Length: 572
Image 1 (cartoon, one colour):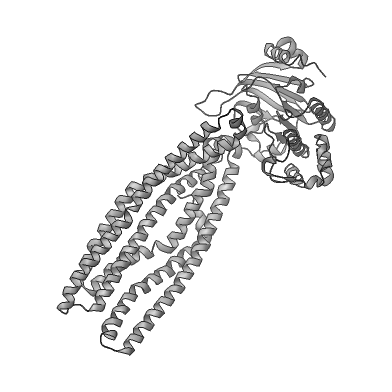
Image 2 (cartoon, rainbow, N blue to C red):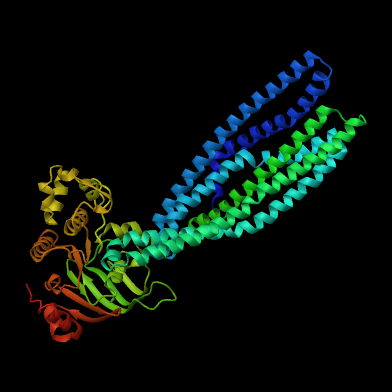
């Protein structure tokens, strides 16, 4: 909870003035039944038109002033809740972008999306209700009891009995519903996760004819959520008939007591009407309180979930280090490096030791699941490994994260493009790139198809780059990396969608254009790495072979088998 308090500092005025004006409106509302009693008893019954007009004018004035107070409160509540929600979303976005890969994996994409959207909305609604009703509703409930005692102590006792009775009923219902609302939010996470998983893997689902099975799983998840929602709704719905029962029973008792007191002259008819109004005000205010309990219960679960993200300390892989050393001839040195994704999981990489020099072309290959992509994640310190890993002869953990990653350009396995244009995607690599630099990068990446497009660099890119083929997307992501002119270029299976001639043209162009850039090519295709200065063969997270193509063909059994399975993969 304490993580969310600082975001209220810009709205302290609204958080004070909003409830203040709502309190004024509640005071005026408590005065209205007294004026009504005065109008009936001293005006209508006595035929005094002046009193009637005076009382009616007073009621109208109080109503209008109350309306102005409500509008002012609503204005302040809107500013505070919407502004607070915006600030909270911005803080969540900043925090999510600062989390390490390990932390992102721990939370999961689905729950982060839910926390950023649904949970922040729940908190935003709670802030609005806090300003508008959290003081007004209890004040009206207690104020109605006080006003009843002022009119008649017997009626006041009835109010004093009904108030805690209704409060106990609300507490019992809330006690049952609070855990269910929390379970409901967890089930929403599960449903979001399944929907996202199915959308991401829709082609695989259809290719394996799993549409019916996955649909049934989705329906089962949805039905479980529906059952919980119905259960909690039914429990919450008990409040309405119970409120009606208490209200109608209270009115009957009040009329009975009031009728007796009127008959003996202790009360007047207008006072009885005022008491009925106060009873209605009290019970309606208590219903509002019960709704606030539901809103704040949901918000409490959301506060915990949002606070968990905001309170997560930035992983040392992101925050540690402040150095920006000068380049040296040794780019990377791995010395007995081990890595595992979680403390409970096995090691994904074991005892890696090798050295990479400036300007070298490094090929990394091995069977599926051997740790190739995991190794590339260590190059940019996206994860923290055990052992000694240096970049330019400086321990990688001592580097300032931004400075370190400015040295790298990374092209992942799945070509990732962002909605916008080809130009805007290229500018991710270099924000101030000129048009000439954009075309040079595209030409070097063999993305000549862009020149044939009518809009050229301004060709639209839909979300995920779905309006381009796999090969086109790969070449665009490579161009985005090349425009940066990095010291280290990592191509993580980024050539898989290219034909042999395009791949060869691109690799040769890279060596000529960036002779001092250290290039890592991760691929299961031997033809993509035969010209490498060093090739690392990985299997089960271990470095089983290291050397040139010819050396590994002579010394590494796994590499020999991989090459043989691809027809020998002769050297270019």
